Amino acid sequence: MTTPEEPNSIDRAILTCDSYIDEHRRNSNRMLMLLVQIGVVVLSGLIGFVYIFYRQLFGAIDQTAASSPFLNTIIFSLLAIFVLVFGVLMSVYRFHLNEISKAEHYKIGFMRIRIAANNNTDGFQSEVRQSLTERAFAFHSPSGIFKGKNVESPLPGHPTSDVAAVILDKLLDKIELIEKKVEKS
Image 1 (cartoon, rainbow, N blue to C red):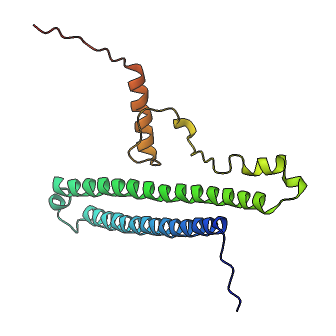
Image 2 (tube, rainbow, N blue to C red):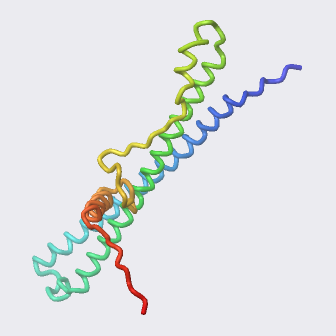
């Protein structure tokens, strides 16, 4: 009887990275589809609002009922909720993309280690093996213009949240806090 060969630990690590990548790709696609669906709902709501507004201009709806402060409050509240939900979903989407990037980097690192381990010829005993194995798993997350900051963004990846964090960080850099000693009597 022949049994299928068991994958070694490096091959299992590569397969684990593949499954991790597939899982995060599925989740990121779900987030993207959810963003599209929410966008369609908001767009259809906007079209409905414009339709009601134009009907108001032509006198089909009572002027006082359509321009009430209650209606404006509802519209602005729904807009604020949409912006908040959109920001959270975009940050979750970006999280999945970052996890995919990390897992792909680790998968390539395992492939480099496997290449170095499988080749025992004289050419692979020197600089080639060292270059394949050295820093194979060193992953540096992209920092861009926001590196070196003290204030972390509550929604990383959302432009307004990142800009607010940078502005707050700059303000805190300009302010010097001095401890005031209080004498006890």
